[in-house]
Length: 306
Image 1 (cartoon, one colour):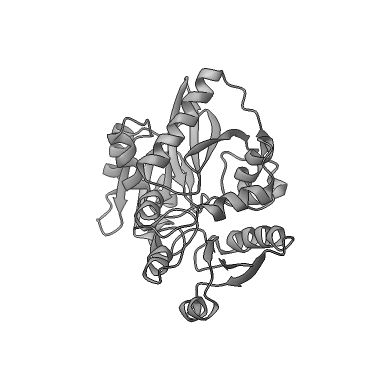
Image 2 (image 1 turned 45 degrees about the vertical axis):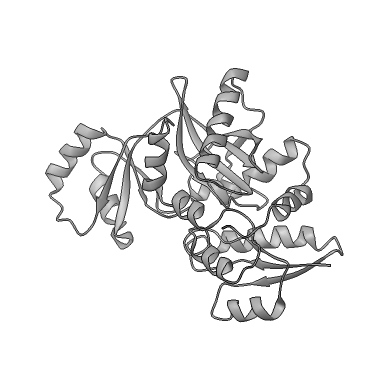
């Protein structure tokens, strides 16, 4: 039997999503007697459990900070345990929206223009609004530098901007990004190959946390995406390029806006959700890859990054 330690839960705002992902994945794996599964929180007992259980690999199903940012990956590296998804540096770069954008820009990947705001700076509201109008123009998107699942992401006009900005003060620094209208298209990559794409039509203003995880939000999922073959190849190629640039492993999901025949890469996710509403399993199903086959491909790719 293959011993798998499943890391789930954690301390980020995405804790509940991580637990839902773990439940979905473990229910599938437990159907097969070749797996011995143990679920573990990344708490104070984590390393002791890791050493006593001695898993063949860790299936990392954590989301957000401490689980998707290189932190837990560094612990697993030090313990010389194979683990799924991307390594320390790749995870840290992908979750940092500013650093990943710099890499995209340097490598000719189109991404929305942005400014970083640090809350230690004294805020002159009128001057700052004028700066935003000059550099980006309203509306703008404000978001934490290193959160996932669209947690605390807002689209702001000139009137709502300051209040929404100040509501994110607890993060210390935020990204203020040019708002790109248009279609929302997401692309999944697995094992450095193109898995596929899906279009989202949210009933809400954009594909935010509620739209992602609340079935009542009624986001419409369109697959196959109604774009030309040329554009399909273009957007999936950009996603693959970003995956390779950050040296990601396993599965990633890249988020795009398609506007005026151009694809804008918003961000890349190194540990996308695997719940009943998640996009990667849906793309896989369309490609005739079962949920179990998808999980096993992720497991097969587990390694120790050096």
